[in-house]
Length: 309
Image 1 (cartoon, helix red, strand yellow):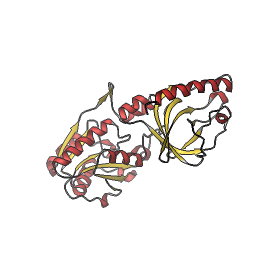
Image 2: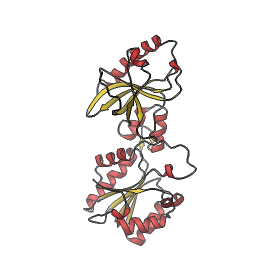
Image 3: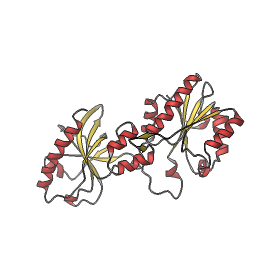
Image 4: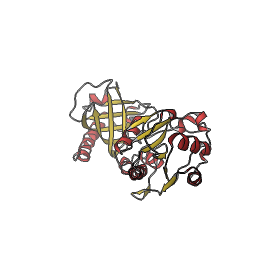
């Protein structure tokens, strides 16, 4: 997969088939678009091209609330490569670029620079300044400039319309299984292991405390989860708590993974958590002894959830 990070750098051996979007999460709705993209590219004996943006427009445009994203750019590019995309153009998104009109985006970028032969879009895709561009505009300009356009319908999974916003909502509710169903893979977070207060170690459940490497990454809702932990090329089973540790009256959100059958020093190392299933809500216990008993039960439940992995 070739990656271009400036419009001026883009090159193709033909008139490619392209799609445009942010693609946060690269979920199963996005994968339907990519599957169609690749199929038409093969029919035309040409390349499939995804045009995306970095940073996410919501991180740049004013008047947006705090933004939490499903993926870093590198995670997104990895999913594109797994899906078999030929070329990705990552357009740097800033306030100046946000002012480009839909007409100019189509004419100057899709037609003049990319030289598209066909464009695929999702049913709810809007683009250009103030999101004024839509499928109808693409179709009309396609007839003018000689490219065709395809619009794909919504994708339903588990009776839910698949969208990045619905995946985010599921994760915030702690429903990591539903999120994985809509994504097509289990949700992940990567960070560096930092020192904690060692209370878990003192009661027999030492934890790796995670500091996220990407500050805009969405953190699932508070609770205890069955997880996998990737360290270098090795994967371990674990249970992870996300929350404020009410039993010890902590005052900040922490992400703590108790890795099963593990005693290595991993401070300052990067690890990745994969969320498999939620075990329970976070709750306050009357004593550390009560918490220790609950953690023993949690470990049994987590091991059961993870036994087939």
